Length: 217
Image 1 (cartoon, rainbow, N blue to C red):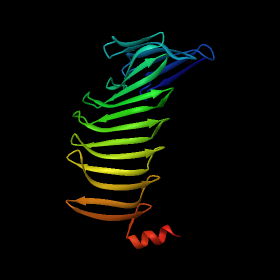
Image 2 (image 1 turned 60 degrees about the horizontal axis):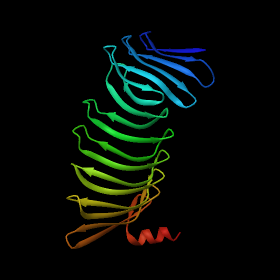
Image 3 (image 1 turned 90 degrees about the horizontal axis):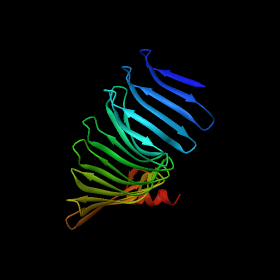
Image 4 (image 1 turned 180 degrees about the vertical axis):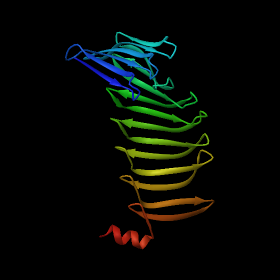
């Protein structure tokens, strides 16, 4: 059984050839008609593949379930480089249009799992994130202009806990409370030796008496 997909121009985009319930082959083309990739899959995942650039040269391959997969868009622009082990992707590096890395994302059994790092087009860090089972889970470090700007805890994909914001990478200037993805509770702002406290109730700024009243309802 075969399935074939086409570009709007009518040129073939992808052909899937099913040999059995556990084995199939995939051939993909660039929009101009040049071959993009030839892949073989079985019950273990990706077992054999060749990936081509626009000049029809092999630029990466997978053999016996191990290797590197270079993914380009239909016009040849680099999108990502995937590390393949035992037929499964273990790390995906995505790229900005200028060719610099945008993110390093780890995978385990098809889901994001572990420490993910993101970067600006100029190479400065944006974030260091902890992921579990396809959700942000754990502390996320956020950077601004290359310096540490915030520590923000996540629980199952939503901010939850105490966020710390910094000046000059290590001086705490704010502590903010998050509950299930919403600002809820006190937010302490530190200016010199002075502490200013703002209050939130489910993302809504309130004063302390209103917060206490709503919390006791």
